[in-house]
Length: 72
Image 1 (cartoon, rainbow, N blue to C red):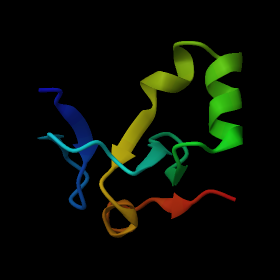
Image 2 (cartoon, helix red, strand yellow):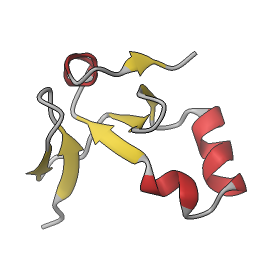
Image 3 (cartoon, rainbow, N blue to C red):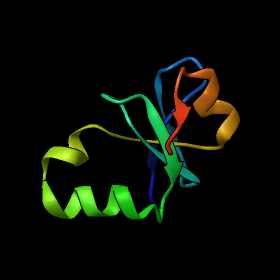
């Protein structure tokens, strides 16, 4: 069974058996869809660097509560 690391509403990472539905950038404090073209482009342009700041959320409620804003 795969375990995923998600960022909770309290801003702390926790283990989940269910993957996140949204991705975010911890430096920019933004979140968006996992298929976001801008994020995917940044991952390709800056291999390894962007992934270090990447976080995942169970849902939008958790992202907002953790202090992130929607991208775009």
